[in-house]
Image 1: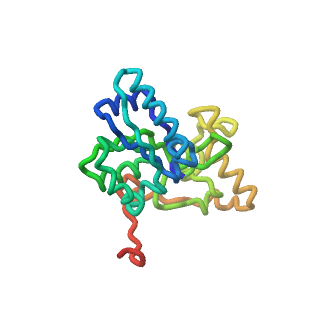
Image 2: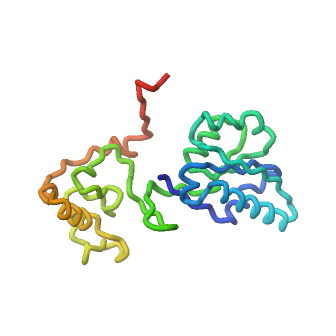
Image 3: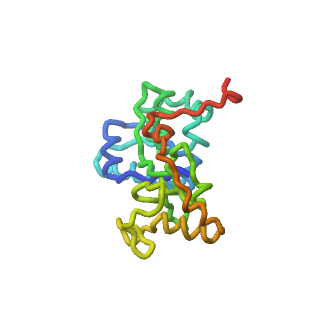
Length: 222
């Protein structure tokens, strides 16, 4: 899941200063799950925006809407008939959603209302943690299902760095050493031989280092 957090209210109010009528747009996917940009958060932010602008003596007209997915052109097309009525779209989706709206309606300012954070999993109610860095060359089959790219602070591929203490990373006693977790998991699985597997230097061209990436499914592309 892509995680996000709402921008500070002061920053949001500043970003909408030039506008008098906006479309506040939520998304029913990841940002709904992490309580950053679903229908409920759209309603809360809409009320806060109206109040904030009233206090400044500059009323703001806010219409609220939540699409099924903002990163999908099929759903973004739903705005075509009405989007010209607004001075700007204020998106509460991740950066993918913001850019999809901006590409489809290039004449309209599109303002992000949240900061996109990372690909994470839910650890507990209200707690999400980074689990995947989208490197394009998954090694979880060799590491007991624990990612050294996303969870090791140094992205080390062949065992711990030597800086960990009692299973905690040297950057913080609150951060688990990923390679300690990998060892514990492999031991539990009876696969400790994988710990000795020497991984070759990683080809980072499959990750973000190789530039913007695309996936083309020839069997699905029209």
